[in-house]
Image (cartoon, rainbow, N blue to C red; front, side, top):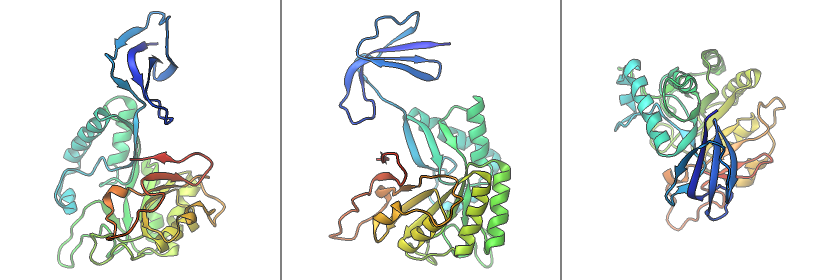
Length: 304
């Protein structure tokens, strides 16, 4: 087993304690010891940090590694899957080089890109952060991600479905293909003319269908939900991860228990992604904005 001793470093351990001088011993893929003075490295490779800071890897809680650097979301639909996979692998390496050692995907722009990337990283064929693979964003006609025109078919990052049977079928297909997370767009968004952020576009039956599939197979459900009604719908059905939630009326609702009893996770997480939200003039940010708020027993983890 490879042993590496990092010396002459300032340790930022993620507990809120200011950086302090010390050494870190790594054995294989595990941190074996963190100490102010490790005097017996027992044949470990010594790395002199030259006074730099050593910290735990960062976690990207709202990752879109398959979303390429493009001006319009519809341009994603024009990229063939082979080239798309190669560019996704480049994004994964770039994220790891920036210090992110794990990420939870918030949706894949094509059905199996996240799955293929996760498997390639796990096998060592591609260099990147450990990843939870997601499905494309499941949306409804006129919802966030529906870029079709009546005279022209177009596609971006979403799968357009209508009715609980279509949502259930596609969710099952994504489980079959190996995703860790099923993503649904319960609300609209600011950039969607037909369905703005305050619109709740999915029905109770559609949300329940996806959650039924996820809970039957031990998967997570992640939801795009901006407004209060969409947030409460997600909570009622045991959605595990709530993205944005910036138009909630009362943040205490995030700590309510789900109505259903078969939830695959006892914890739920709100990922506000505050930096993409504009406040009204004179408005104050929510007291919980900027954090990943756990509704379980663990402490909240900052995402900024």
